Image (tube, rainbow, N blue to C red; front, side):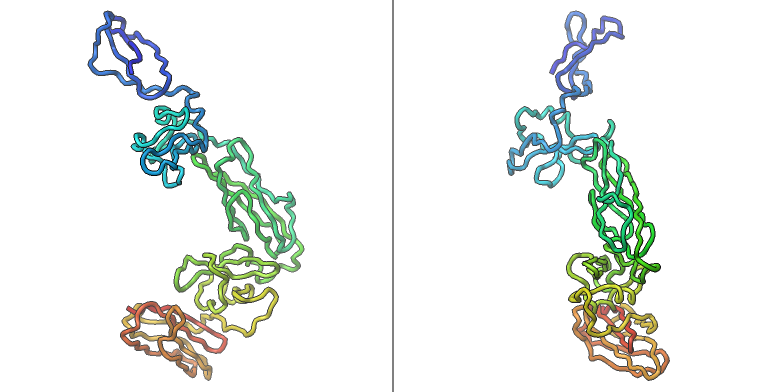
Length: 395
């Protein structure tokens, strides 16, 4: 496209001409002499910004084109990110690559030239301009009451204000909170005192914003119970066998607190207590006492007391990993019978249970497994009210 003379080399060198293209991009200006003859055999390319209103119709969520190969139902949708607008496939697969331009047809009054000027494409950075970051947070309870009762349910709202709250994501932290979104529901601790909760807001192209709110708990009586730290959403332990990323999470149901696997599979069975490791600040005995487990009713009594996991047995296995020959060592009490079991992770026994009468000294039990036994096995030792477990890998 020829946008006319941009200079006459027979005139003073500072001669210039303003051109007003109807669209942005690289426009071509031809240098001529005063008789109209061409001076250069190659055009001069000028980077021209598009008119300020040229991109106004490229609004968030607008469909501007569709694929002309493959599935025509896959559209090109405008997505606002910070101060830039991106071309995104409507099937959510990815941002549209620029080299797909020949393979899309525009919709309505949109043109490919306008798409090139107004949109960013796959892997193109958003640079320049001022991000749309006019937003602020003022978190607080939905009923505006910061004075709460012991173990009372509460809803906190982020209360975003400003012209740019759209596209903001929220995450919450604090005692008993484990959630995202503009609001979060949880149960207040069962111990008196002030508790601070923080919400963090993030938006593409903007700096993170944080704000806090303090809620005051009263009416719990005394200084709280040993179970006060077991608040809704708190992770108190993790699996010691299998996937350690699966946590034991506290979930409040009515008047009771339950131990629930963080992967959402089910409530944790009580017989998994030997196979979890407590997080700092918690103990297996406290988890057993303060929480309900799979199949246990709220307010119901336990059928029988389970042995507690106790480090007093000092269970050790060596070598580990092994080739099927290893030694199990643990402490015994005089006259106390200890039972040693060895099973796979599905609970199937790989050898008969063995009983040992304690002498008050450390006991070493040599284990020799058949060559057909391989994988991760679980060693379990129960002695009176004490219990200890450890994994062993058999190559």
